[in-house]
Image 1 (cartoon, rainbow, N blue to C red):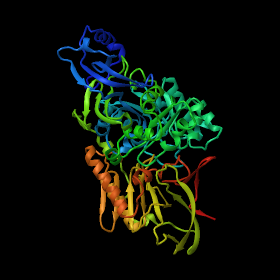
Image 2 (image 1 turned 120 degrees about the vertical axis):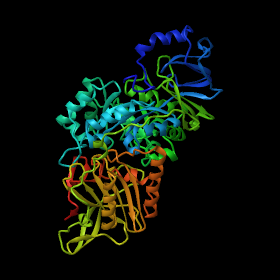
Image 3 (image 1 turned 90 degrees about the vertical axis):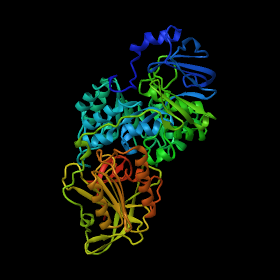
Amino acid sequence: MNQLVSPFYRAPLADCAPDLVAVARGSKPADLVVRGGKLVNVVSGEILPDMSVGVYGSRIAFVGKDASHMIGEHTRIIEAAGRYIAPGLLDGHCHIESTQLTVTQFARAVMPLGTTGGFFDAHEITNVLGLQGLRLMLDEARTTPLAAYMQVASCVPSTGPELETTGAFLGPAEVAEAFTWGPDVIALGEVMNFPGVVFGDDKMIGEIQAALRAGRAADGHFTWPVGDWRLAAYAASGITGDHECVTAEDVAERVRLGMYAMMRRGSAWHDVARTIQAHTEMGLDSRRMMLVTDDRSSESLMQEGHMNFVVRHAIQQGVKPVTAFQMATINTAERFGVARDVGTITPGSCADLILLDGNLADVNVTMTIAAGKVVAENGKMTVDLAPFRYPEEATHSVHLSREVHQDDFRIETPVQSGTLTARVIHVRENHVETIEKFAQVEASGGQLQLPADNKICKIAVIERHRGTGGKAVGLVSNIGFTKPAALALTVAHDSHNLMVIGSSDEMMSRAANAVASVQGGLAVVTEEKTTLLPLPIAGLMSDAPFEQVAAQSQAITEALADAGCGLNYATMTLSLLALVVIPELRLSDKGLVRISDEGFNLVPLFVD
């Protein structure tokens, strides 16, 4: 990082050591002193009363009972007055793009809630723009107060070109290049092609080797079931963390193999309640357990919160408050090898800390200090963050071969008329996985006819990176539409092609064209109106303020609910229906992809 880029630059400890020692002994005044608080010591696992913290520059010089010897004429004093002083919260697995916000606006959204840093896998924008997308996110992150560590996307594409079309390609050489950009490029992002790792794919193994040779960690994404011997083979590659834990047994297996188990509570996937039982009921040591979001929409950030919400939720499941804080601070920092800098309130660490009122279990954050500066107080930012300008190639990334027509959503049947058996993607509320179901459908005039009860909708994925015109159309259930409606979105993990879901071909075409006209985003079309959330940056993020994006996201949710789709944070779940590395059935622009014990395979819509 370049100190000239941001006033929130965290200077290396080696550069600060002489000054920190001088401040700690009282030879030099501190810039900031927080005194008289209850220190949440995540290193020792205890709460210490009447403690003070002395800060010089971006780092902590002193932690102890009495900091009076380092208070000078210009030292800012913050009276904790019995409030808790805790390390700033860290999100151990997050894709900022999934919040629909730029990094700057994400910082504005989460820092008043106590998040001071995180480990961000920018594989959404990288799948669209390649290394340029990652570099843009990194450069923007460096201008914010966040301790933002970026991960290099490992799966661009998430599987291979035979299963989906993406906007870019990264291999071992590109991964190695990204690690030369600085120490804040911290790890290899989640390796979703887990069959490729287990069975020795050169690209996947080569990327992991590039991370290991650069001294970086490698994150995992393993969805084969509990008790599968192949998890050990996956871990043998050097992958040491995984967020695809949905049961306590999943957590236990990973921890026992020396991995870090990430327990997520995103907007629409609620896995903490079950996974945390590995600690609360099975009694496993929590030091390799982490709390993460993966991910939260702008709407849920506004309504529920960020890591403060996840920590509070874990405590409600029976985790001791200090342990829950460890899972969102020191455990996370240790997993990525940066506990010397973040995750604790100890001398020499970065001055990223929060003050909390009331009961610690309530996680009621009243002040956030990042890089030694007060950046938020009482739920509001206290510093202005300059907007980051994205180049034209990032804001004009939706390239369709032509306007979308309603005929593009016709499904040709192998018979002119009669009953057929078809595969259907069945959506599960608050879960990332889908279920492969089979339904009886009718053919008429050589075309599939949707049931009149709207219980089955069409789903289409249209290639949008190169204008090839490639597309596939399938069927999806449990959307909930009670009237003709359609949803179109370019947030379609992970290749982020244009995905359209609907019960009316005509409305599906209108929704698709509405999204394309604004260079990406989300659109809901009903007979009454069209509701639009433009996301012009890579078709993933808005350039508008957080509050505006959250309101637009809420409008999309309300439009879907008005059409009958009442799924919790529906677009977060529906955006995953093109993610071909999560069981059981997904749709890409190449067709239906089934994920099974054997790996990933294209399967036909109709079953003999």
